[in-house]
Image 1 (cartoon, rainbow, N blue to C red):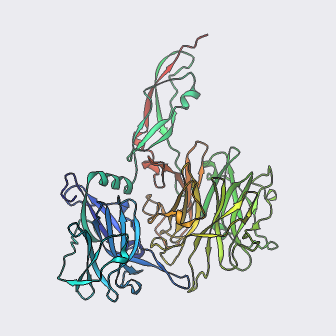
Image 2: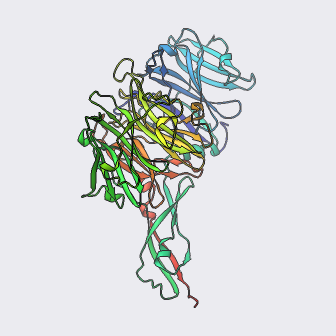
Length: 609
């Protein structure tokens, strides 16, 4: 493979912690590519792609890990393997990892299989490591160096059977092929050549998608302005995917009462929403309902007390001056609703509209509640909402006997109704579990009581989730497509720039309560590297606007700060050629304004009488 024509070089590397790019982010696997000379270009915007998983001790406390000195190699079947050395959260030797290395396999450098730890030695720390497949011996040769400068080799016949690795054998010195490159502040690993087919797929997946062309038909036969407005433009993107766009036509010069041929100018439109949409509103949600839009969020401006709802005919009117807002649930000592009115979400469950949210009493400790709108009730009237009910387990006890519950969401797929929420014990103490995602089924007729045991879906084990003193998996929200259920969730600092969106996915028709059936992405799908000027995007929701666009809302910061003002943001979700949602196609990458001007021949036919 290394001698092929039209080859692309792939560099594997980690980064040096610098400024806002912390050890939790830099001590991960990064990739860059080079098509000619040695001009390497980072993939995934120079953000980490593979992160080491943390360990969990007997007290359920998470211990963050990183990695160093990764090495990329070819496997026996022509695909790829990666070895690296696991380190502690600050990049130092890790006592739990002594004598072990990390191993991943990949067929395409897009998806990766975590093979776990491979034990090379009982007592020595590994400083450097490399792996190559010896075709003559039909074995993998893992060469490594310890902290004292000694060199060793272990042999392994099957990457999937790491327990059968040989004992280490000391050998002569070995060069680990770590060369300097043009990228700044990186710690380079080795360079490996791949063929153009794989390289094109790697670049397409790990580089930002952008609008490359906009097309309309050469001509259309229409008899009215209404019919012409129904004609859509097709936006084409760098990965070959497409999206329909509305067109604003200039109708001057066309007379639909006179048959003939007209050249009409127009401009493709994608509604964009400037950031920030509004200040001090986090965990935002929009509900299209009865030809109007409703907006609800955590109101940081009021110390997170009360639930505030806005109503408007258009999305932009929700955020313009003079917006209509009302409090539908205020502080209520009698019912124990005192503080932390957190993360309210509208959901239609069965035939009714509900709000799922968390709230605390006098003693801080948010717990999940559900509030139902009366039949034919007015969303904007507090009196039309029933008293909130705290969510219970199937046995009638509360969802959590200790710890806190929050950020509850709902989805229904394959006639299975599910709640997903975040649960955390020991927050702020040495026994802090971090916030964890759980799932359970419910009956649509009574969603306040679970119909199954809660199942653990995810814990914050990756460096980007476990960062800046936070240990978060929270803010889940589901996007159900024809073939998949996706759950985005948030990790990192909820009030800072490291907040980011992770992704869980599962094929439709699966057992949603089988945690092993869910796939967890190793790298976030939206981070402070994704969209210029938006930092710490997280705690999102989805909705479909009245034009048919699937939209994502989230909160973010205007600056790179560890704790700032959370502000609402929004853009369209793009779907690639395989129908997979892409979460970072926004603004000019969604619709290039330089391509938006269009023209079409409009034929107004003779109407037969």
